Image (cartoon, rainbow, N blue to C red; front, top):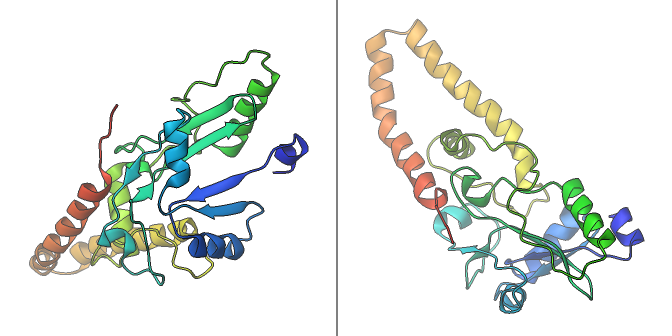
Length: 233
């Protein structure tokens, strides 16, 4: 942020959440940039109409809004991630997420902050007036886990009874900070099943697994139908 502002720039986070929730997240997470609520997607529509960025949107279902402590309001769905950098003369950088299984339906596969800033600096140093092309191969913050593992993580977040998305709960905690705890919960759950088959009569453990299997299958299927989208141009 210091480098961007020193260069005369500013950063804004635009979200499809209402402004009240955007402001609350900004305060709770102590962000140093402004969060702008755009539930009717007027900003995204303006960028789309001017040929700058064509953000994808996804429908909001009960899977996303369930267990939240706030009233979600997405009359036109919610944004998939995107980055747009521009000055008064041209577009300096642009990227948009194309949801698929490899990036967990848009939840991963996002460019790193340092990489984006380097691309912006390179555009500023370029004396041409051409707009930056859409970045289709950005440097991301690590490889997303296999989609099946992602599904198990969401089941673990819901205590293995139903999948629970990592949505903001209005409690001041960044939802992604729950990942390590949920991962340990998943490892412990798998360890319990291994211990059950090792220490208990096989028939008992087998019956218990057979009784639980429909719950797991229903939950994992819910994750796949919600996130495992394949959107292509």
